[in-house]
Length: 114
Image (tube, rainbow, N blue to C red; front, side):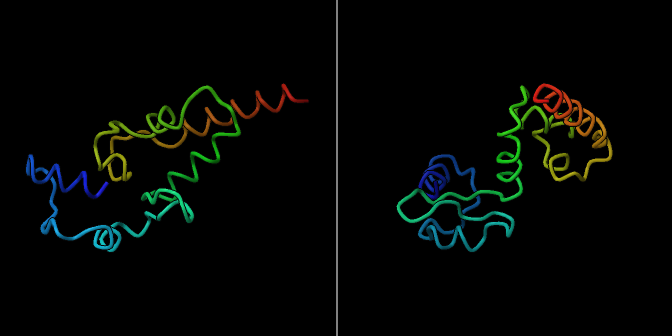
């Protein structure tokens, strides 16, 4: 991933990597604190947001039709806008719609399994 970023920097000048000689260790030192390295020995090392990954893992067993991306769209005006995604946007919807959706889905699932 770092090599791809450096390649893009060289080709298009679009990434802010000041020194292409810096590699994975520099990438790890400047990543946000909420991003962790996932994987164990022998696996690919990737950077994962622990909050994002935990939400995905919690939603997988629920087996609702909507993906986590659909649920995110219920919380933000624009998934491409960092202000929305960081919940700094005053125009984004409240959590109420998402809470209602999940409550309904979980209630349906509970009733079916009775």
